[in-house]
Length: 206
Image (cartoon, rainbow, N blue to C red; front, top):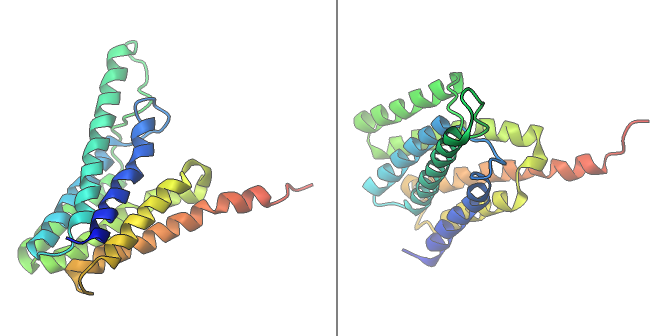
């Protein structure tokens, strides 16, 4: 395993730290079920790439970060429930289930079926597109509220994805498909975040 892949995994873990810092305080709100579904997709991605003896370290690092995030959400939720009055709302650690979670669940199941019938290579492609789809709400949130997404976090994600893609041994599916697609997702996130500066420089209407 080369240095670029190790650096990629380190950047991926570092990108979670701002979220981990704010979760216990309740400054950010995260849906526990959504993170569990993301973790399920990351397990499929990691296992499918491992089965091909490919570049698996990046999705494995993201899965590790997701596991820690799920733990912190659950711990924060449990703490608030134990301290809150009966019937008081829970400010974070939400358990909401919407149509989006239903679609992501269907994608998780579809990826497992595809892997069983079509093999790990096709499952890698399907899992990558499923991960990108699962990230659409985050892109929408960043577009609507660019100030709420730290630019440093997005840059760390871009660095992790870029290093993983650069560290791939060749341009095969198992080496570079997932991180290269993730690079474009990270770039879109950064472009949306940069809207905050354009919005700040736009003069208010008279």
